Length: 204
Image 1 (cartoon, rainbow, N blue to C red):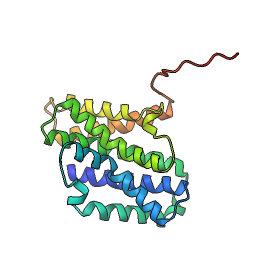
Image 2: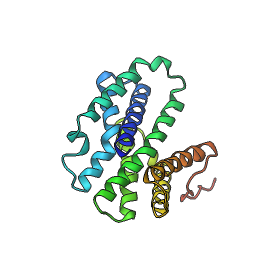
Image 3: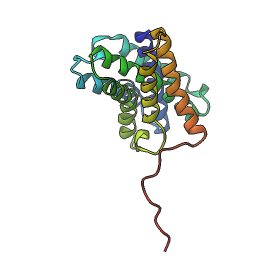
Image 4: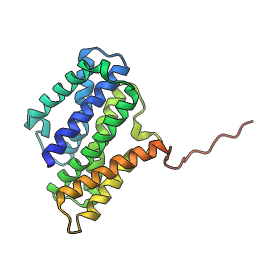
């Protein structure tokens, strides 16, 4: 279950990276690089922090194959993907839901405190997108007012609350992932955002 989630998250984020690269009209090499860093950037930083080296994608060549295959798929069928902005949002949202769980599981495996596990999950889900946006000369979504990292945190809290109940672990993973995805979708649909800490300038 955990490995499957990791692979699905990799596919979702790789396609997300390809769509961003398309919007920036990058060449083939640029598209592949953006797909790669989006898919493994957060996980690489997570593994380095917990001392799990070589990092996961270096130990399992399957991830590289999956990223390349996902990028090629998105490139070939790019004319079939309508509403790129909607597609990008969807794949990005699915990706953060899946990768939040991957990061939490890594933290649990390393015997870390639940709060640190949630932080690792949020980092895994968010920082691939941060690196992608920086390379594409965009302000990362996580640093804007949109609900992004907050959705990951809510999913992580949900996981640790449900794990104390007599529920199968696979079901807990699924519910926690759905919480992340649904929170993000609802936040965007209803324009829910974190409080603005900047006062509006008074017009002279």
